[in-house]
Length: 289
Length: 279
Ligand SMILES: Nc1ncnc2c1ncn2[C@@H]1O[C@H](COP(=O)(O)OP(=O)(O)O)[C@@H](O)[C@H]1O
Ligand SMILES: [Mg+2]
Image 1 (cartoon, each protein chain N blue to C red):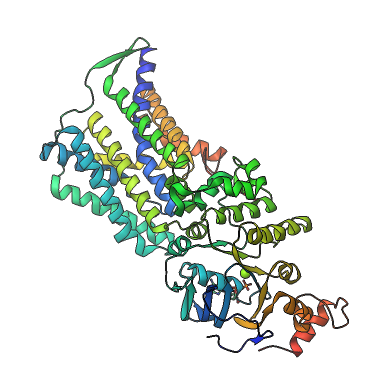
Image 2: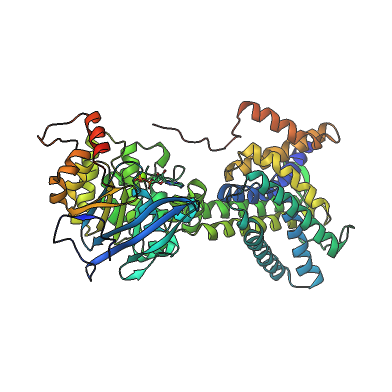
């Protein structure tokens, strides 16, 4: 029983971080129809941006987070402006290739500045343990889940109730009709990339804290794909559920047989897609006469 | 100012002046750098009037509206000659958003509501340029049926409801000029009546100026003050609504009435069209 509780907490923590990482992917896909293969690398870059502000520049924690978030937003906007905008209207496959190239570039830049050996980073999440339902679980995982829940809730509120959030969904639905409302589609694209980079930074920060700060953060980004496909590519709630499902199933599988967590996400993915081709929450095209 | 090729039937044809809200002057539009669609296209929309823009499929009516709203670049099109002037300002190359802020709104052909957004969220999107000044009550008051549908997802509404939403969404930017692209297209007869009544009330109750693109010439001329007839990318006829409704060519082509006043078969009209082209 106590092992089950532990696995659940570990699974939820991974799932929360995955959902955050996947959120950026979904925002970009939904608003701009770009499939961003560099999402994992945004995580990587985000974590190192925070490391630079917090450890190398010795800024106080809160300031370092703000600086990191600002830098990530600027990076996101810059990527959209310089790399993606000239490709608007080009073949989607060409755009995918460019994002794969972008992934390689981002990774190379991190290697150039920080090398390949993991960096020491002082723990920012609480280090102790807590007792949940009779099981001892690390506090940092619980806090990671809480942080992810707060961030995801904030995004959900933004999309439902803010004028800019609604505008972003309008652009996702029909770009030309959005233009006619006076919505600047370009600004919405930039906003989507900024959000993606910021949510990736938060995910990267959490992950670096509960695991380690190294190149592996980018690899973690690969698991984003089962999560978003499971969630339906364009659904924020779907992403949250997708993250939780993949996180939990991986941990339970690992509990039964070491190493199983590597394949579990993909097994779940195949099973669910067999039943629901749009993913759990994907938007089917509305057809009516 | 006009190219002078159009046949004006009225000495009361308005001249550009202080009372002109919109002027399209000698506009040429080319798609994909080679497809010439509008050529010497000119029209005037006087402040406070409803102007009908008639013409058969492919005449260039929607293209004219895209030139006015700045949508051409999204379809690899461009205004290559001429000017569009709104309320004294040259907006020929302005961004779509700037035109909305100046007071132009478009109800697009085919409704184009945001399908995955609720009715209210569609209105929120329509009010994007208004910020805190958005007046939802005015639109719900003008189109009370929308108020009852507030929380419904737009994609699942009926065609008539979607058309009403498209109009309500356009009104949210508090425009001075409303462009409507075939609002009655594909609606059941009863809804067509309602739609033309809404267009009339836009003008009489809200004081809006409107440019109404329609294929339903008879109904359009019944609500309009004046009208233009377009063919192959330019204006071929202009006049007051009454004059156009009385014009033998308009009767022939767009009202489906022969000289004797009886209905002609489509085949006759087609034959006549081949015989007597305006161009
Ligand atoms: N995006 C486009 N690219 C190329 N040709 C177009 C485009 N849009 C319209 N056209 C052409 O321009 C002409 C006028 O079209 P349109 O303005 O939609 O006419 P209408 O609204 O009067 O039916 C048609 O021949 C149409 O094929
Ligand atoms: Mg049209």
